[in-house]
Every structure is written in C-alpha cells, then in structure tokens.
Amino acid sequence: MNNLRRLILKGSMAAGTLGVAAGAGLLVPSQALAAWPKEAFGQKTLDGALSVLLGSDEMGESADVSIKAPEIAENGAVVPVTVTASMANVESITIAAPNNPAPLVASFDFASGAHGYASTRIKMGKSGDVIAIVKADGKLYSARKNVKVTIGGCGG
Image (cartoon, rainbow, N blue to C red):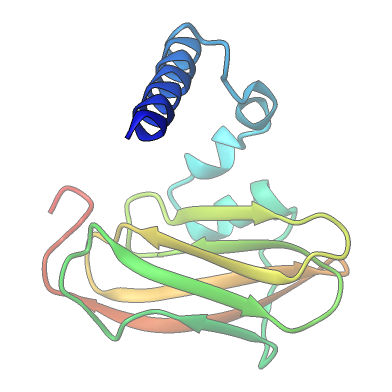
C-alpha cells in the first residue's frame, strides 16, 4: 500500500511539473510551429493549396495509394481517414476535402525511409470526396473516396 501511494505521488508531481512547464511556454514545439504552411492552409481552392504546399497541382490517380474512410459519416466533425501509400520514397501525404471552406485538411511530411502511412480525423462541412495526395520521387499521386456526411462539422 505504501509503494502505491509513493507511485501516485511521483506521478502527480511529474504531471504537475509538465503542466507548469507547458503553461509557462517551455514545452512549445517551436520548430514544428515555425514550419507550418499558413498560406497553403488559407487557400480557398484545392489547386491553389496544392500549388503553394507541394509546388504543383498536377496529380494522377494511383492504385498504390489507398484511402480508408467511412462511406457515411454520422458526424462531420470527426471523420476518421487513413491513407496508405505502397510506393517507395514517399515524401509527404496530404489530405483534402474540396467541399470544405478551406479544402486543405492535413499534410504529413516523411523522413527518408519512412513508410507511407497517415491516420487522422478530419472535419467535413458537407458530403463530398476526401482526396489523398501522395508526393513520392517528386511526383504527385492521388486517390479519392466519397463520404456522405449526415451532421455537418465545419460550422454546420
């Protein structure tokens, strides 16, 4: 019983210390925040967002890119999306929902040798396609899946 109490006290102290450090701004991921492509995520068209983010909007459909998302999303505020790219030299995976007010939803950059896999939850304002764009060896490949939204997530 005494060991359990010590363990709880140590855990509470560690959590409290991390909370104070985060609150004081000591644990801010400044490098990640500095690299955030604000201009790309602010674009109102998918072509504009891809041009700013990836340098091009020219992409071709590929069987090596698979996107997993529900056919019907009961709540557009939390639509699970998983993208897998089976090709070599994946540089990034970008997820877009063209019917959203800001179509660029997420972008993941990969280190050399990483597997092309990304999973997240996105917001969708209304039904439409979810598009996965994979950049590999400097070229863009895509896959799309239509998702029907029953309750809006982007202010709906």
